[in-house]
Image 1 (cartoon, rainbow, N blue to C red):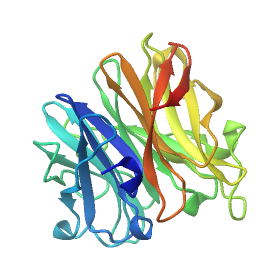
Image 2: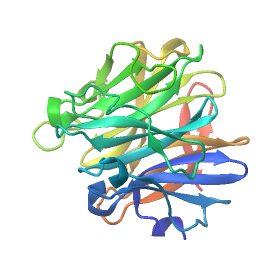
Image 3: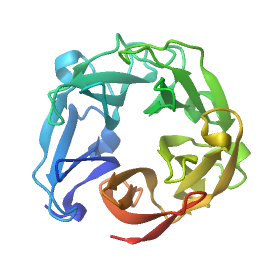
Length: 285
């Protein structure tokens, strides 16, 4: 398969043993009741395998509604998937799942959602700080609070529950570039943490500019997750977003889905320029 044939949202790539493993939201019906997630495998980012199911959400009663944004991290010898599902109370939340293999099958690790059960949340991403402490960075959704926010909380050592209080870092409207959708709703989507070659800590996240899906950037001061940061100009503002960054040797890549229209979404790959104190899209792969 070519990338244009892969109809997914929210692409996430793991590079291991000379191969690329691509995860994402099954884009049909905007990822609603899609019964789980797949992984695609490639050796060149151009030619991909057929999808291999790595998580069956029906098996665990998690196909109530959304099956969104799976991302996979290797942590203490296991692979952990963080993905958004609809809870029994009808609100969305980020769950953790685990497997001994990138191909799955993944099984639930958390007892229900990691994120606060009374909140509407999505798009949790794992961040392990300079001391080895794990955190979940996630979005409190605009559908509940109008002006979406990005938050973080310390995780316990087996990534099955929060081990600290939730800290709200910023709201979408505060970044200076995001425009509202609907009736003054400001969107926060898809946070992902990246440490540059000189140790600077960045977070990419998505919102909207003039109706177009866009990829924003935050740079934390002193290389530490927290409330001391600055918003930089967006990486991308032309109908693409919910991206992530992955490395393969000396090359660094940025992947995102485009266009942001149901039925047409596919992953795109670009080389990322890491200048240490700033990151930029270098060119399309």
